[in-house]
Length: 259
Image 1 (cartoon, rainbow, N blue to C red):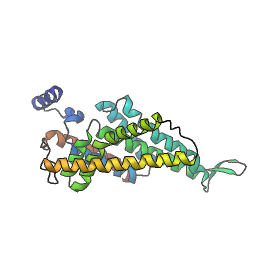
Image 2: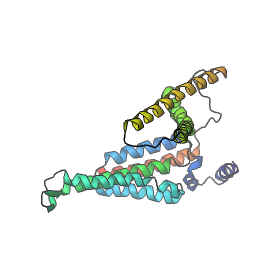
Image 3: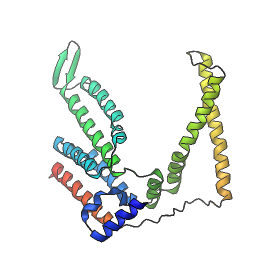
Image 4: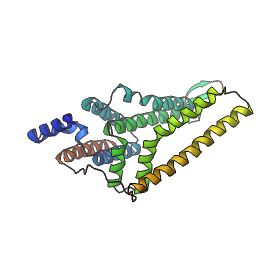
């Protein structure tokens, strides 16, 4: 909290546009719109220079803002594993320009190019979203979506899902520990399949029972279908600087693609 107050005081006193790089002070709605706009633009472009430029922009942004730590960089590993799988499969799907032929196996240039395009787009989009939404709590994202006009039922579903995933994980751990203490050892047989079915069924039953108790508790506390956040965020000058910067970047990428 002290850091936030200190940053805000420094910003108000100096009024320097460079403070826009501190994304913690930017409104979540602005960051969400920026992430969606960047993702849509990267999805629409097709030229290699534009894709490389988009990836370079988000890498520079990650380094400049310090938004990504070591753990967040690791989130790109599953994406690139999928890209490697596509790189191994798409060139074998056929094409008019063979690059390599080993017996009946023909590696086509079109498949290699397509896999490269998919890899660049996937890395640029994922890294851009991670940078723009870094250190945003899921509750803040849910409230921002609500303020942007997303239906309340969808935002409630998102907030409750995030809140109770850990609770369901603990419930699953207790059930699994109880099965192991009773001597259960998974094998490839009908008993194992039935046991896993009972495990999933009990997890669903306990989830429904917990959901009923949560609904009753919320109604007892006066819940009438809406969440009322305590922080009434308002757009500031910092959001204007951030929006202008994002617009410049998007316009530059669009000009590089279609100019």
